[in-house]
Figure 1 (tube, rainbow, N blue to C red):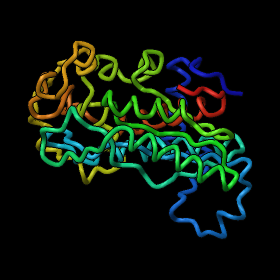
Figure 2: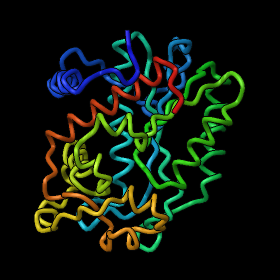
Figure 3: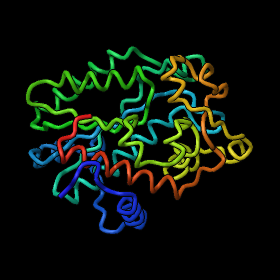
Figure 4: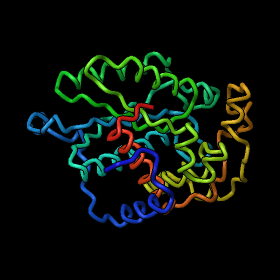
Length: 274
């Protein structure tokens, strides 16, 4: 039914329209809102746990430090809703919001932990789920710091026997090619891509007046990482943003979320691990 990475933009645009209009969408199961008896009575053989993962870090002067978590949670819900349409039960777990964030380490509000702590935590979550007969843990990740991405890749590699950890790596070219033009430039931290999702999910957190006055910052964060830079400042982001924040729209954010949710669902259903 699903073919990993083979949807063209027209198909993804159609899915985005359907999602935005709530055509045939099933509500996600929010793990923390369920009782233990409801969880006990689930058909856990068809259950997939989805953990949103993001950082608490600087996202320009117009977005909250919890932006990554807002994005990851929206992605997880969109994925769970699509899995429901395929006969699976998508369980959206409480978020993991502390991780390695050295690029933003010099900015107030950034809370970073060692990468291996995140790896160990995800492995322990997967192990605990497996003990409850839920064998697949999918990571809805919205944080692209290299140290953090490495911790997620390690979790996939070290997944205990009988468990499967699925990680959709947004930094891979084949994934990025299906996302926005800004994302593909690499100038995509606290810009139009992320700001649009915040406007869609939590418009109350988007500082509209501030964003409207921010000039574009086309410096490519991804290129700076490849060149060996180690911080937002060195990469050309003295205010911790890259891209075109003033161009963010809720409409784009809603469309982006369904694309992210669809791609993660494909990775789960097709067995893609990275």
